[in-house]
Image (cartoon, rainbow, N blue to C red; front, top):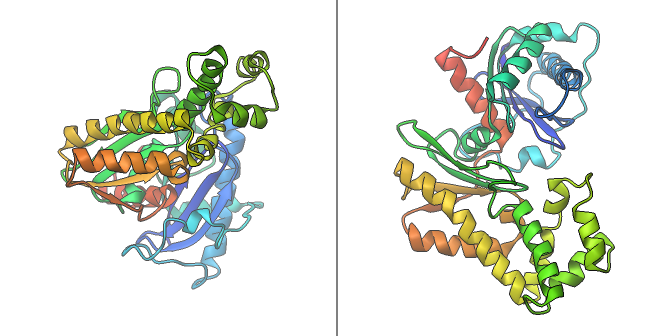
Length: 349
């Protein structure tokens, strides 16, 4: 029996789906983070070794347990939450000789941020080939797997607003376009990081009188266990501070918005404005003004004020555009891309 694998690599968790070549899922599991950018060779190699062992063990288990742990792809029957709910997921450990099972995997697609950079792709390809994997290998950005999963391989647009923000689309003719996603220093408007930064800005602006008092101050101080602007500045500019730390403040916006805080509501409206821009760029470039749009990421799933404001702006600018629920998640989107690559027969080797 032959298989394909789809991998959604993340900074905290990696989701893996093993499927038959017709798209029928036989196993899924979670692995540790796959951080490609800024990691040394040894760290990357260990991560990929664990992943290869897990895949090999999953193939061995699937080959010996036909008829179990399967879901049929297509028709929208399997919800997008399937691989994020913990259902049918197990701990898979590769044992002695497990790598030999990888010969049954004809194609692997890995989707992760930064992975398609030529230097990174070359390094990862070399590592995986070193483990004896000889099948098709496709390395793409996580926005590509998210789009393919959300629309089941069909045309459409996906907006992802989590720690960062990016929009990506594919036309019926197969043309693609990306807008945004260039990092928190120069881009990512409307993202969790941008919202966290705006909340911090509101605190210092309220403290020095540029804006009126705001509930945001109390919420931020409480979350960070600080009580003065000086302490807040010390927290923000600590060399160990990461963009994820700032983005982690974003959920406070919902609390302040629910309380009717004026400054919070302004931030929500501004975030919606910023998120509309990449949608418009993709829709106009690909002539998808009446296409399907899927909205993903914690900002859009957790903050109804940002989401509702964005919905209103989309309806006003593109009345023919349809906002849809994602059909599948990114890991199954990677499976679909692996299947597509098999049909083309031209993946990186």
